[in-house]
Amino acid sequence: MGMGPGEKPKEFKKTWGKLIVYSRSFMPVVAAALVMAVLSAILQVLSAHWIGMLTDEIVKGVPLMVGGVPIMMGVIDLGAVTSIGITLICLCAGAAVFTFVQNWTMATTTQKISKRMRSDLSGKINRLPFSFFNKTSYGDVLSRMTNDVDTIGQTLNQSVPTLFSAVAMLVVSTIMMFYTNWTMALTAIGTSLLGFVLMAVIVKVSQKFFVAQQAELGNINGHVEETYTGHNIVKVYNGSRDFKRRFEEINARLYECGWKSQFLSGLMMPMMLFVGNFGYVAVCIVGAMLTIDGVISIGVITSFMLYVRFFTQPLSQLAQAATGLQRAAAASERVFGFIEETEMEDESKKPKLLGRAEGSVEFRNVRFGYTPDKTVIHDFSAKVKPGQKIAIVGPTGAGKTTLVNLLMRFYEIDGGEILLDGVPINEVPRENVHEQFCMVLQDTWLFEGTIKENIIYSKQGVSDDDVVAACKMVGLHHFVQTLPDGYDTVLNDNASLSEGQKQLLTIARAIIKDSRLLILDEATSSVDTRTERMVQEAMDILMKDRTSFIIAHRLSTIKNADMILVLREGDIVESGGHDELLAQGGFYAELYNSQFETAA
Image 1 (cartoon, rainbow, N blue to C red):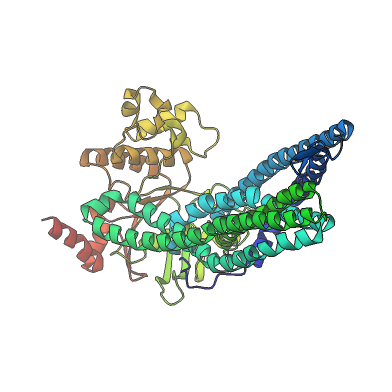
Image 2: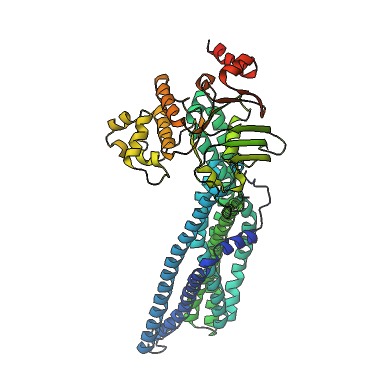
């Protein structure tokens, strides 16, 4: 899952190359913003030259003490001071305008890139096979969509413009220093070389810790999400100690990577500050000596004090930008790793051959395994007529749920065929197959919305009367009427529904969809005996004239099934009616009797 601190990170340039290619449609705007950042930096550096000129003009009016007697060196040229002042105002105002436009442009553009990235990740989830989520935690996926995308957005908005601005300021300040006085320039640059060396060493060492930090952040999100989703189970089985142990292990690794990366990157600022202050001291000493010798004026020293700041400040900014770029590279590696995952086959060009299915289903020598070395369904064959009620029974791991997943094309079979109304389901789009089924599972799924919205879900053209009729069928209408807002009651943390009521809502949803094929995965297992009787009666109405597949765990609920398929280790070992299978005294009879023996 995660990358340890000792592992070699992937190529920094390659990852950033992917990010640039991904954002290529926004590049013209980004380039314009970066040009403005560069122009702002240039104007700031040029202002130092004019400040030096202004200092020299003012110094002309300051008396020089010689032997205790003030001697005037000249007269202040107020016209020149005014001209220089206006020029300085224009330079500073221009730099401010460029900075404002650049910040606004980058903030807007980076949010659009982040929005697109989140949309692409969301769309990618729908194109990934179920097998991907068998090996990846939901929390890790969420971390890529939130933490990693936010990290990339912040870097593009802050670090990238800072990088270009710092480079421009570094180059222009260097040119201006040599243009003004090469001796002072060499003094300032020589004292700053130490900063470059230290920065290069720190960046190289800290990169691997930033990569590991992002990976461990995804790990800890995944662990917390999984644990608190099943918080009740953790408490019941006293799993808190194990959860805490595993959490502390991941948290310790995250701490280790986090403090090393932050400590190393945090060293850059004080180091650069020291280098900058050392540069001021060197410039003042050398400048004073050159001024005494009459080589330079006081204004040149003033300009160089600013040049040193403009030269050392980019070093600090480059250090910060390097930290952001490393963090963004680590985040991009995870995001693009997700985007580049193998998708399900694109079926947009397949013809939509299934209208409203009649309901005949045939399995022909179906073979399937979640992994190549472990086959779950070996050689499954069965024919189901329209309107039949088929119960699928067998011990845990026999392949009951797997069989339904294959029928729905949640997974692709390794061999054989599954036909729906005589059409192989792999010849039509998956969505076309899904349209033919409605499902009621053990685990209820409701979203934050009104009761009516939850029942209708994605079905179009459903009237309020249809919703009421479905709720009456499952015995839920009276309960809904007792709620303050009736069918417009919003299901959230404040709306308390029992597990049975939640299950009834999902059953009503299946009734509304009104597909000719129905899948029930022990739909009544979460309700009490009285509610179960109501639901079972509603199910009998729902299953009339529909082909129904029932995954049964309590065999007493499927006595009236038209056909019972008994699975054992991926194969049908028996098939027939309830009484017929009991009379045979085989595996079904053994399963059926064992439930009553256990109950007794």
